Amino acid sequence: MNNYPATLTIEYPENANRLTVFFRLFMAIPIMVILGLLSYHGYNSEQVPEESYWVGILVVPTLLMIVFRRKYPRWWFDWNVQLTKFSIRVASYILLLRHEYPSTDEEQAVHVQIDYPDVEKDLNRWLPLIKWLFILPHIFVLCFIMIGVLLCTILAWFIVLVSGKYPKSMFDFVVGSLRWTLRVQAYALLLITDQYPPFSLSE
Image 1 (tube, rainbow, N blue to C red):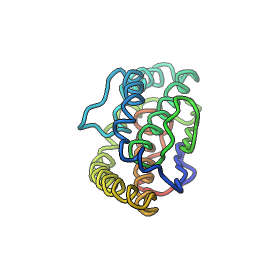
Image 2 (cartoon, rainbow, N blue to C red; image 1 turned 45 degrees about the horizontal axis):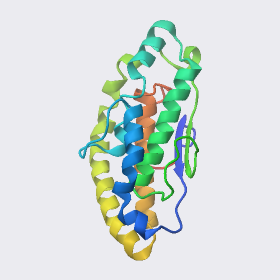
Image 3 (cartoon, helix red, strand yellow; image 1 turned 90 degrees about the vertical axis):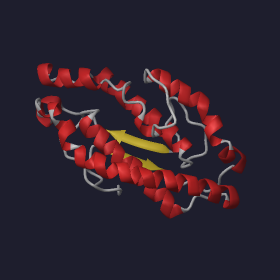
Image 4 (cartoon, rainbow, N blue to C red; image 1 turned 60 degrees about the vertical axis):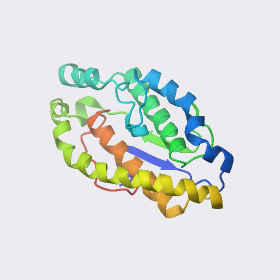
């Protein structure tokens, strides 16, 4: 899967500060507010952190640019990518995958690579109009996977408080879930590829 034009890897944390883990949700509030403002709306208790920023991604304008002008301006792409990276860093912090406070601009230990598309060569100009239909199977599966992510995060919170370590198998599952989500977003929201995202948690 490593040839997909959107990739995510997160370095496994060796040790955690139990105090910051205990108060993680409270400590994340300031950075969540910043992300919410960039995204034109905030968080609520029913939203999954990595999914709540897509209003800030220029989905409809990007779609219109591809359909009518066959263009994806580089500054437009860079904005979408940087917001995506920032959001994933925030999600990684909330989900206990990383323990350093999320940076607004530095990569830190969350590595996201999203390739800039050659619109005329790589993208079908009409496909963005119906991509939302093609990803419905992914959305159905991801709804169940995100339930597993929530349960893993709750269980990991207790385990980290006791042992100081996030179980590696659970860590890989949660990271894989974020990776799967990123690929779907790259296909249907960022619109950087027509390559259908795989049903896979792996790299």
